[in-house]
Length: 239
Length: 293
Image 1 (cartoon, rainbow over the protein chains, first blue to last red):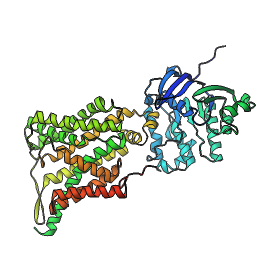
Image 2 (image 1 turned 90 degrees about the horizontal axis):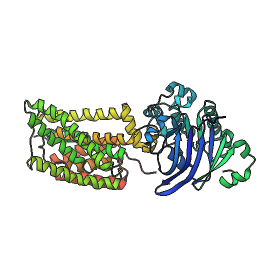
Image 3 (image 1 turned 60 degrees about the horizontal axis):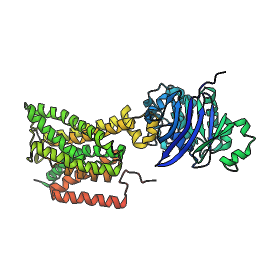
Image 4 (image 1 turned 90 degrees about the vertical axis):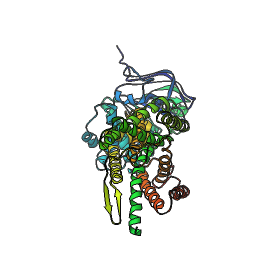
């Protein structure tokens, strides 16, 4: 039996952040149609790994490949065009631009995405606010816009950094449903999440990060019974 | 001259100065807003525009309107090309770090001034006005050239505004201004945007220099005043706020004109500097700027 190569392959990655070693040997794979949850305490290196994949850190060792293409050394603006979408931590919308303008920005990646009408059909709340400043939306609406903006790239891999941060349960459920839909559509998702329940509800596998090092957590189904491992990497109470 | 006529003359002078100042300061504000660098050499791009306009007009000769039109096209293009070189050879190499770019652009002030001094000499150079009209107002006649150059400046400001708000490249500039890293994560080549913005800022200063050269001779030291007034305008308006820059340019420009006509140009500069101090005390982020969160 041959095993299909992963869509995203991160191997023994080491990087610096502000001159200080931040990651020291991180290995993560994400396959097509697979959701991998990246769990760990604050400062473990989760966001640094996402930023490294997007080309924003100084890589000092290891490899990052997307569909066989080496990402290390590639200029950041040439990474989304490969089909990698980003939902950044804290949303990082272009707050002074309108909703419509935020949704036009991904066109710069030079990748044919879905028509705007189709995007708005999936996010009807944004259709009513196209001319509104993104910064004036509610927290949940802003998160929807951050996800819609990333999906405008028609990504094959979506990097989501704490998409449920600060949101109400109904909005968390909506985002979980979106991730489940992406999985069915064959999109690989690397999900950084502080809310353990939200992560385990949709993830296939878990990778733990601790002090810049990765530890394979295995399949979610097996992990659910291994409370000790969760407590070690995420903390008692499951973050 | 009756007081009303005197006042109208002062307002006209102020408005003409405000239009040119707004054009010059718009370039400085754009560069700071998007690139977060303070370009101390901005006034020298203004000076280069005026000097290149004189050189182009002298080289070509012919009817003044034709040579001026040629200068209006070639000078901003030449200065934009110089700015692209500065971006590539200096700013990019110091990674656009604020401290390093201030020192680098201070150095460029002397480089440009000395290059012009050695090439064209210390004399002030006149460029013939493209036409000779006089517009009659109650009690006095006014230069049609000055009114035309104010109109041209307004058209260029409106064009820049439309470019920023209605075009694809303008969207890239505004997105980069708000969040450079996220802009890159969605495919915007931030370095190319920086180069373009720096060239555009320089071209705006250069075209302002071309517009004033028929009424104010080209000289290698002429960049100081536009730089000082542009800084005043950008600080009062709010660093990086284009709307604030335009509003402040008209406040400073018109008050400068009125005070200069009724009292003295020196008093006008003192008043403008005093206004900066008052704004900085009352509202450090400027009239339209945002306080750091």
